[in-house]
Each structure stands twice: as C-alpha cells, then as structure tokens.
Length: 390
Image (cartoon, rainbow, N blue to C red):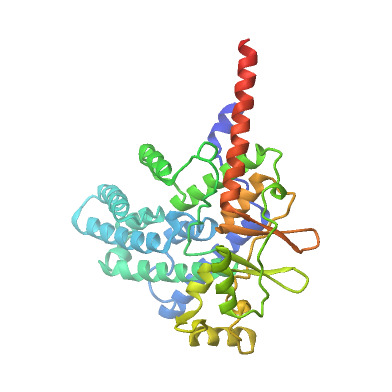
C-alpha cells in the first residue's frame, strides 16, 4: 500500500516555505486585483461573471510556476482567446451541450498546441463558453473580449508586476546554459544531443528547453566537481601577468594588448587588488575609433557621467568590466571549469587570501590540464583492469 501511494505522488522538487508563501500571495493579489478592477469598471448590477473560474487555474501557473512554458504571456493570451473562440463557435452550432463542450475542449487543445500557446486553464474557458448558461450564451463572440479578454489582461499584468518585484523573472527568460571548457569525454553532452532526446521523447514537458539544458549542464559540472583530481588552480595559472592601472589611458591599454599578444588586462590599484578587467571586447564595444586611436564617444561619456556624477577621463576605468569572477589558487580544476563556464570569460584573474592579484588562468591552460588529468585517469583505470586480468 505504501509503495502504491509513493507511486501516486509526483516527483516534485522541494519548495521552501517562503516560495510557497510568495506563490499564494501572488495568486491572492492577481485574483483580487482582477476582480476588483472588473467590478469597478462595470459595477455590481450586471449578470455577467466579473471573474471567470479558469482564472483560478491560471493563477496557479502564473504565480506558482512562472518559469513554465505553459505560464508565459503568449500561452495565456493566445490560449484563452483561442479557446473562447472555439467554445463560442461550438455553443452556437452544436445543439447538445455535452457534445459541444467535448468538441470545444478537444479543438482548443489541438489549436493551442499548433500555435504553441498551450495553457491548461484555457480548456476550462472553452467549456465555460458552452456550459456557462444564458448570460454567457447571450454574449456570443463578445465573450472572447468580455470577460475572457479583460480577465486575462488584468491577471497577466498583475503577474508581470508581482513576479518581477518578488525576484522571479517574468516573462521568463531561459538561463544561459554554461558551456564548460572541458574535454568531450568528460562533458560530452551537446545541444544537438538534447534536441534529439526531446524529439525522441515526443511529449510536452513543463520546462523551458533552455532551462532543461542549463539544468543538465549544471548537473554535469556537479559531477565533474565530485570526480575532480588533485590538480589545483595554482599549478596552471600564469604568474607573469601584465596589468594596468585604472587611470591609464585607453591608448596604453591598446598598446599593451598588442605588444604582449594578450586578450585581457587585469585592472589593479596600487596594492595590486583587482578592480576589473579590460578585454579586447571592451575596447571594441565601448569606445569609438578614429585616426588618433580609441576614444570615448558622446553616448558613453554621458552614460558614465550620469552613473558616477563626474565626467570620465577616457581611461581604463571608463571601459573595464567590473563584474568579474575571480579564482583562488586552491581551487580544483573542476571548480575553475565551473567558474569559467558560468562567467563566459576565456581568462580569469586569480587572487590570493589578501585579495591581491597572483596570476591569470586562461581557457587553453585549463583545457590542457583537464586533458592531462583525464589521460591519467584513463591510464590508472587501464592499469587496474590489467592487474585484475593477470
């Protein structure tokens, strides 16, 4: 009996009490705002429903699982309007309400899947159009705009505001899947592999494809961390680092990059603490070029002036990237790979316990070290197999 009950329970990830309270509060705000605004607009003397029942199901998706593909704006807008149109059409042309409701629900699902706006509560919208009674039937196709369209717009607007104010990106943007710079044998999953698996699975999944890939990548990195060898960041960092002061002019930064054939300069203060990094991309994207070399354009100067409250000087500090991931010498190769993959940078500074720059790790050095470690692991495994065979 216990085994049967366990099989009936969904394999849902644990959710904190705070997140449950956030979702419930969002649903309260969304439904209450939708109902109150609707009532204030039309008054209380009308026979039409101010808040249709499917909005309760929409609230579950919009506030409890705002990252779901089924909860995105096009899903609720397209799904509800399509379902309302199909439901009204079925009610007008099919005499038996039960047959009409069944066809309306089935038709809504087929069309929503074709238009990529699948929204489960919209199935209830289709049924409401058929089984809602005389007040709904008298509206005809007006039901699509009122109350369906108005309810949909109000609860969606509340969801956009509430989710973003409480730390949930909505409309949801899939996380960027970290592409770890590691050998294919140890982190061989590609985007094409994921697409092939999804095509073979051939079922609707309640997770964004990008989120799925990011989750799998993070699982791979976690596995890599667990199996990491003894090699540390200190053994692969380059200690002979060319750095630049924040007040150095842009022309000096360009000269250093060209002279030393490098792509990144750590920007350090007088105590060798890392303030940021200046890359080739920074010089290409954030400055303008003429016969005299790199200079700050008007837009960049105005942006810096507003942000800092003072005029820029056309120096390294004006174009450097300040949100920089740094490494520690005692980090394992797997930790370095994870940090580099998540940051998206090809070079990362390494700082000591005192926060001072001690070196730089490049992606090429990391790949070489990981290949060496992987080869040693394969060699050890073959040695153990040979020993067992003997």
